[in-house]
Amino acid sequence: MGHTGAERWLAQSVLGAGHRLTRPRRLLLSALAGLGDQFTAEELAAAAPGVGRATVFRTLRLMLDLGIVCQVVLDDGALHYRLTSGGHHHHISCSECGAVIDFATCDIDDLLGELSRRTGYAIEAHRLEVYGRCADCGDRSQDARRAVPALA
Ligand SMILES: [Zn+2]
Ligand SMILES: [Zn+2]
Ligand SMILES: [Zn+2]
Image (cartoon, rainbow, N blue to C red):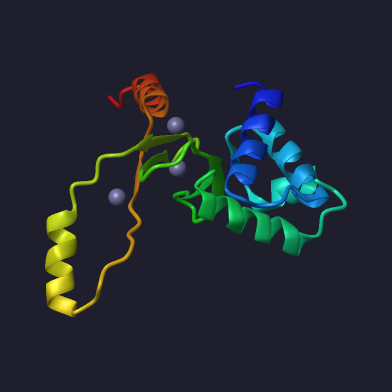
């Protein structure tokens, strides 16, 4: 998706949900489309000078609620946002380079049912983040290990 395509898609998602496309929102969507598929709130704020921080965070909240963006908690605790076409999903993140892949399978209904029975909680949502080394980073560390001269 190109810059303009992403911007149009974002604008349509906001309008389609019955929200007004105010000038700050328009600026934020335009900035967002230029940031690529993963960004922090600070990066978005920096890319849209003139839009107040409160508006940046309110608009991010709106886009989370609309399912246009999702949150990723990286292995170091950093909170990133990603563009998403919606639907329930989770992330597997590389603890080396921060690459993120979505996955939609989470067979945890049994676990949640059991948890609800045990605690009396009515379960409404869950988060699941998986961390590891991506194929590229795994390969690189293998290479590094091979490069270490064997001790005699
Ligand atoms: Zn996501
Ligand atoms: Zn990696
Ligand atoms: Zn899930």
